[in-house]
Image 1 (cartoon, one colour):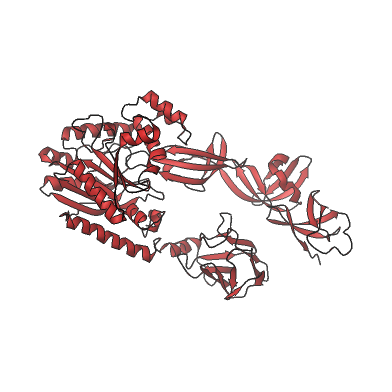
Image 2 (tube, rainbow over the protein chains, first blue to last red):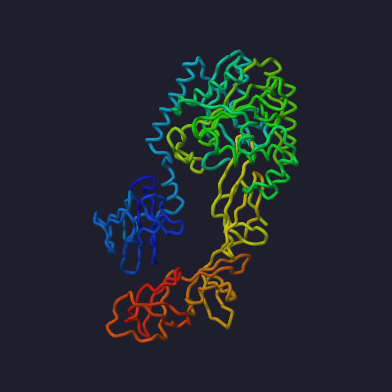
Amino acid sequence: MACLIITNGLDQGRLFQLPEGEYILGRDETADIQIELSAISRRHAAFEVGPAEVILRDLESSNGTYHNGELVKNSVTLEDGDAIQIADLTLTFQLESTSDVPDAENKMHKDFASTATVETLKARSELLKRLRNCFYEAGFDEVETPALSADTVVDRYLHPISVEVGSRQYWLQTSPEFGMKRLLASGMEAIFQVCHVYRDEEAGPFHNLEFTMVEWYRVGDTTEQAIKFLGELAITLLEYDRYEVISYQQAFQNILEFDPLEVSDQELVGIIASLDFDTPEDWRGMGKDDWLDLLLTEFIQPRLGLKCPCILRDYPASQSALARIHPTNPLVAERFELFVKGVELANGYHELLDADELERRNIKANALRQLDDRPKLPSDSYLSAAMRHGLPDCCGVALGFDRLAMLALDKTSINQVIPFPFPRA
Amino acid sequence: MASYKTNDFRKGLRVEIDNEPYLMIEMNFVKPGKGNALYKCKLRNLIRGTVLDRTYKGGDSLEAADVEEIDCQFLYRQTDTFYFMNNSDYDQYELSEEQVGDFWKYLKEGMKCHAVLWNGNPITITPPNHVELTVEFCEPGAKGDTATNVTKPVKVETGAEIICPAFIEMGNVIKVDTRTGDYVERVNTK
């Protein structure tokens, strides 16, 4: 059977068998041979495969089709071994496919390659070096804590992956938070870590199940100092001349004209119903924090950090996670997040120190998880033991390094900055 | 019936919503770090072709649609009903004029078609991209009319009217693109 083989680029080695019939090559979803390269027209060229001959026809493509180096004016009859060039793509035509590689193996053959270019991987390495230097210069020590631990963060919407070792259940860490706080309780003072973390069910242009997190803690920092360090780190690495800070409350008041801290459930439902945007069908059955998240994601987040990195601070107390509640304003938690060009990049806390409060929050999160039909997560941990022993007053921040690389290198998908996304891990 | 959790959502999934089959043609994953995931989907109705925008939250699920694509053969038409046969198990299907839509124009007895079955019943029929049809009636072209930009309607064996260049004559076989309804070329029959 006749076939086409891609001979360059990421899809090198990909083979298309051509049984008798007509095949369109193009960028269009309906094309028989779909190639997602911008220089290729939606319907670029056609292969008419007859019993005796194969005809290549250019479909008036913008960038033309070349056959053995010559522009195809209308159509040509292909011969064994002919070279075809379409935009940046080169293909070889074979009258008889020499290999009878089954489809699955053919896919493996193609999927071995990195989805990020060599150029991007080198730039990513450079960015990581600059990031590490920022921490060394500020006097931080680099640490390493277990990726596989008996403890896990208990959060309603974080889904850790469990691994059985012997007969005991362990967890791939969703962040190195517990391990790093144990180091603070053990006597370290300014620490950072660059590590892989794992969150089940997260996949999309800004998500990969396994991703790289940069997390740091410094004993004695106030929220103001922690925000300043984060803001300066962002402008250094992403090359801005300033950053801005806005409170969660102010952002809602500016953009949606209501106070997210004082609004009643009933008023909030009325506000969402009056706005025209896509919500889950059963959104009315969700809770206040979910409603605020819907509005934040749809209306506020896309407008944060457009001119310069933006730190959103003082989240509602109900969204404190592991941050402490503000000592003089019980409506807010000392939690802050960094956004650049609408992308959520980092999350920071003035850390909760009270072990009893941690336990109450874990019980509540587990109750909500059970409501969602999610497994209960262990509430007792080495972290609660460390907190009972005495965790020093500190601030901590976690930053998604892959997203930082996307912004620094102007990429639109996480697959462009990591070599092997989960589907080909 | 099988169902898909949000975690399984991806382009190309066939699902059932309000008792109709849909194809997931777009899926966007959105998730605030500490919030619930949202899955913003575009779904195409496999019967009517309309597109539906739906947002699901992490943990939701959709029923899988029992949709199957098969090769079949057009047998014959009896007034408003079209009869097809599954090429692999010889099951016969009846489709209404409405279900066949404009494709009746190209259906010749014995023609191989592509069908989509939902719960074992055909919901759409697609003829090959190109079909060859014999011209049964047309006005004679004016002498010397060989240019392709002068056109006229002709009536083909299925009863449909196709716009052709003026040089096409009765008894000619023409190739037609079923996706656009356009004349492609005259076929040499000898």
